[in-house]
Image 1 (cartoon, rainbow, N blue to C red):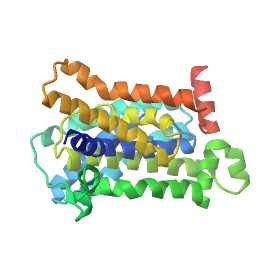
Image 2: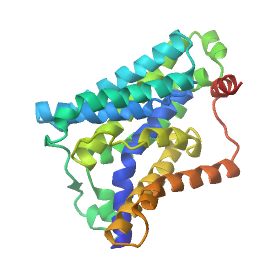
Image 3: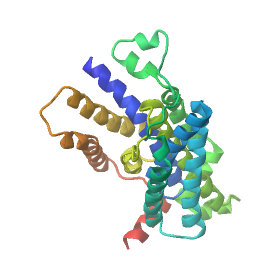
Image 4: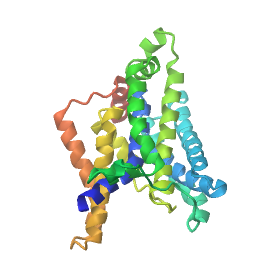
Length: 303
């Protein structure tokens, strides 16, 4: 029973991070690091909650989240692509901007209740022992994430459009020589990444928790940026990092419910410790194959 609860919690909690990881992969594949993913997630969470509250339809909330996350990401894209500002500093600034905007406009929704996404058990499949309830008794956005991950992998690695995106992150001069505008591709990658991250925020507020509180993303966007390394900049591996984090979140909740004699502050640290350990293992086992344009960004920032 505990294993089943842990798996279910890992998927439910990890889905929001999965969307954010895939969003950051999209952004970094075109050579732009977006540390503002936390800002995209939190405004997405609020916009989804406000949209679902106003319209009485959670799908309207998801569209509102995508629009809000896209706006934050577009600001980042304009500043770092068109104005050539420092990517890391700009991302951090927009992260705090998003947190501040969400805190200010979210005050009226703290006690509001919305009609969000409910769990939908899949007939027969949800009855499979241990994994059935975890995989096939989830909300619509979680089910969508199952299909989104392979779809993004196919888009990036099996289509001409994906080749242009990845090429932009490797060498913009080569892409330009093939008649593709790398600036346009970067805008597409960054904005699409912000929109995906915002869907993660929506899943958190109107599907997983069904509530809105200030700072509810709790660093998930920042963790997602870090876990891109564990995923090797590939959507197919993003599931691993997302569910490791989600599993650690679920484990600390289970341990608290079981009354384990461990400081609650240490338990709250557990997901982030697991993430650091996973990153350490990943960095030792593989050579980091980050896009070449990202290396330039990191080298220029450290220099």
